[in-house]
Each structure stands twice: as C-alpha cells, then as structure tokens.
Image (cartoon, rainbow, N blue to C red; front, side):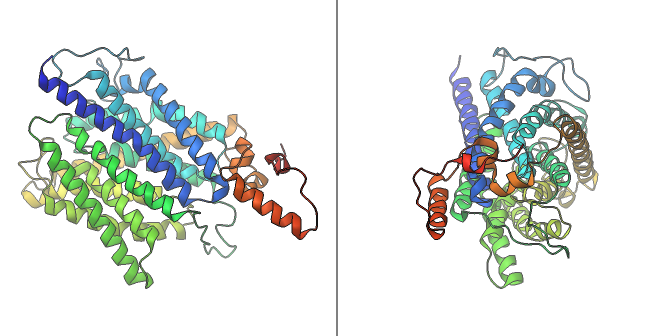
Length: 440
C-alpha cells in the first residue's frame, strides 16, 4: 500500500463524513422551516430514513449503479456489497462505497421535503426503500455508472441532476399527491404563510450544508494528487456566496426588505447549481452560475406557491429548478481545458452539442424520477390506505400523533398550564401526549 493510496482513501472517507454530516443540516433546515409541533418527527424520520437508505444501498443500490455486466439502464453485480477491494484502485473501495452511500441518503432527504408536515410515517418508510432501490440508483448509473447518458458525455460532476433533481422530482410527485397543508390556501386561492418555527435553526442548517458541500463537490475528485480539489472547493464557495447575495438583493428590490428565507434559499440554490459544473468551469463562471441561481429561486418559489403546490422547505425550487440550471450551465460555461467529461460549452466554441446533452439528461432523468415516484406513491396509497395523516393528526402535529411525544415538551406543557389556569382548574398531573390521542 503506497502513500498516495492511503492519502486518497483518507480524503474520500473525509468527504463521506462531510456528506453524511449534511443530514444534520437537513434536520435543522427542515425543522426550522416548519412548525414546532412537527420538529421531533422531522428529526427522527431523517435519521431512520438515512438508515434505510444505507441498508438498501448496501443490498442493491451500489450494484445497480456500479455493478459489472450491466447495460445502458442498470448494473447487475455487487449486490449485498462485501467490502472487497478493487485491485489497482487509487483509493479504498469500501471508502468509496460509504461516499456513494452518503449521496444516496442526501437525495432521499431532498425527496422527503415534499412530504413535510402531512405524510404518514409508514409512507416515509416504504417510499425510502423504493426510492433508494429503483429511482436514485438507476439515474446514477445512467450518468456515473457507465450508462447511456455517460456514453453521450453528460456532465454532472457531483450531482445537480443525479442527486438534487432526482430528489426534487420525487418531492414534486409527493407534494402534488399529498395536497397542501391545512390552512395553506384560502378558498379564493390566495396563500397563507405557514412560517417555520425557528429561523436560526434554518440558517444553521444552511451553514452546515455549505460546509458539507465541500465533501460533496471537492470530495468527488476522489484524490489529492494534483490538488484539483482546492479549485473545486473554491468554485463551490464562490457560487454559494453569489447565490446568497443575489437572492438577498432580488428580495430587497421586489419586496422592499431583504427576506431572510430567500437569502438562505439563494445560498443553497448556488450550491446546488454549481454541483454539476464545479470541476468544469472557471471561477468567474461559478460566480455567474450561483448569482443566477439565487435570482431563479426567488421567482420559482413564488411560481409554485401560486400554482397551489405546497412546498414547505422549497425543495422544488432549491434542488429542482436550481438543479436544472446548474446542469444546463456546463453546456454554456464548460471550458476545453476543464471538460474532462463531454466537450466544451457554447461560450467556449463547443456549439450546442454539450448543451443538448445536458438538456437531454435533465428531461429524461427528471421525467423518470417523477413518473416512477408517482407510480410508487399511488401503490403505497392503495396498500396503506392513504398517504396523509388525518386532519386531527395534522392539526395536533406529527410529534404526538405519529410518535407519542413532543419535540418541545416544555413549550406544550407550559401552554397547557396556561390554558388550565384560564379555565380555573388545577393541574395535578403533567400533561402527556395521551391527552391528544388521535382517533383511529
């Protein structure tokens, strides 16, 4: 074992750890962007969802993506991965497995943004298995595992399409089928703001995701020999900063005040957009890509709201629309020197060839993720007698109705105490979730 193998393996493993830590960012982002009564549920389902994704990826996901004897559609070996090493690799194969497993978990976390505050826990469980086995791995094989899009030179260095668009299109299918949350829309079609309970959590979640993205993008170099990971990390951070600034500015101009939520969404949109192109474009282009993403996410969020598509954590705009823009951007900005996959973009003399390949990848991958997710959710709806909790359960909150405990017990105990005193009764026992046991 030489020194380079060891260092590269440590780098890949560090990238995997950073990407796994992004799950903590998703917990804070999603919990902070939704209401207090669902915070514990969101935290818990994120952990068990990643657990399911890990097991399914071990059983079949890795094999469907990277297995030998495959075809244009999927691989056919390496199921129930044994942890073997591949001779001649420049890094540890098991470390690479963990790295790729972490990516699968992120895509599932994005998909579950469309389920927020109204889906049954059992639906999360079943869909996690199906998405992790038959949606994400198929698209990943097409682009990263030697499938038909990779043969056409599809550029997606770290997953604007594979991870983000796939998850977002599954989220779109879910939020359409689940319908809006209670109280989101009035009878005349106008929307109400169902504010998240903790903007500080949301901001901290975004920062954790920003840090994790260095594992996501720079870690995808899979080695340190030429120091190229530093360039990828630089493009990543510049795009994030540009997205934050442009989103803040556009909301300031259009709304009269800089909206914090929009600024945070712009930061994530910049990160999502640069994920495909971080290794293929120059630094100035990374800034442009991030800046445009921040503006796009502002208008996209308002479009979905007017279309009565209730997207509590803006997964469709941040990961879907920005993912599309990021994927297409390499067709404009990829340079001949950096285009290690595919060809140069339109602005560097490559014509429309690479842009056409990128567009094809977006359309086919997005359509596959949406249609297959829709089909799975329809089947789950029939088997589990519905996707959504009852109206009473939704009003009570999923912390109690699905788990029998509060994410913030002291806050609810205090509320009950105040109500009890108002009614001139004495509390003799602590308030427990049994007071709110939902009907069957």
